[in-house]
Length: 318
Image 1 (tube, rainbow, N blue to C red):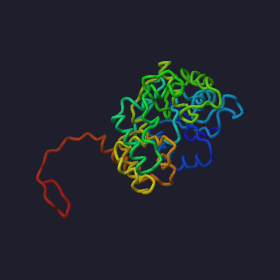
Image 2 (cartoon, rainbow, N blue to C red):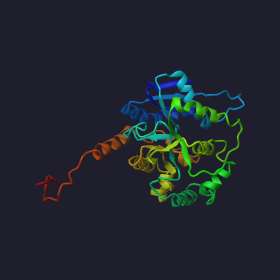
Image 3 (cartoon, helix red, strand yellow):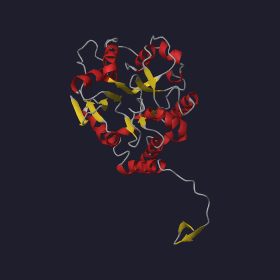
């Protein structure tokens, strides 16, 4: 089943959300931010709520793989759509962010890196993530795991030739005419039941193909900031509050959104499922972000220091 929550347009966001409970959580907690973002940038929004391929098919794979089929399905049913941003459901959007399509090269498949062009030092952040997650969230979490591996080990673990980077497949922007058939062909390179280091997921395989075929373009990390990376680099000592203190968790989310466009709660840990909590962000929280953006976009003069006086307990210039 296909749901067009916002009328499809030339540039459209597309997402796969399977399961009533999952969809309801997304609709209540994530959709409001997507709706505002689409309205601001005049984008359409299409949701697939069923498998794009029959489970009995020998090539059926989980929903993360099926993102490779989205382009052809959209192209068949919605002639008006020319470019899509295929996006994971667990991504909160800062509604006042710039149009991702305008900052992408549509002759390429656009995505973000998990290793390069980051606004932080990668290895140090990964160390903090592993250490503080074990310290505060999961006493059994390994301090040395595939999370800490080199790119060589990452690809060789899935029997692939090592590449120079690692991307996050949670956001992909591309032109349908140029790439929908290509991505569909990639889907059918792998049969059902494929065993991968991402528990049957497609992350490393898509990375390998994007780089081998040289069809990728890196866009700003802000278009897919990673929640747990952001907490590890900014507030590692507050990781203990993520699951226990709703108000603190909300403040952390707002703080991260102020500096980013898309916030991806990637990963299977409980700390990455906090977006599913009802009313994590309310309308007034999004309004705070809007007020900041209105202020940050104003041209400031840099007023000189002046004498001040107190009038009715308010400080006013004289």
